[in-house]
Image (tube, rainbow, N blue to C red; front, side, top):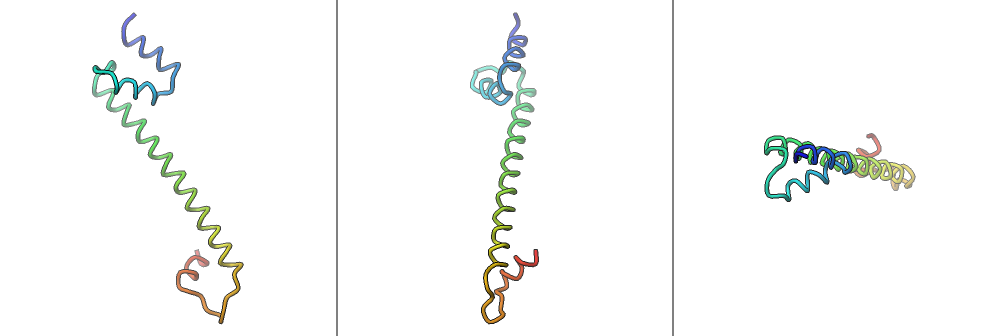
Length: 90
């Protein structure tokens, strides 16, 4: 059994990121360095995109909560602070 077929068998059983982390720990790359780099970069970018997406969703929830709170608060003297007006208009 070649190392490549062993690797493919391992990839089927485990998530790609785990296999890549194992590869990076081992002294020699089983896939050949260029392929390994590409796969690792792909997994890393995917993880970064997921993090950015969750941050975006969290910011949207915070903004909508602030908007609701601003609309519910009574306005004193009929005046808004500049930031409040911008938040309500958005």
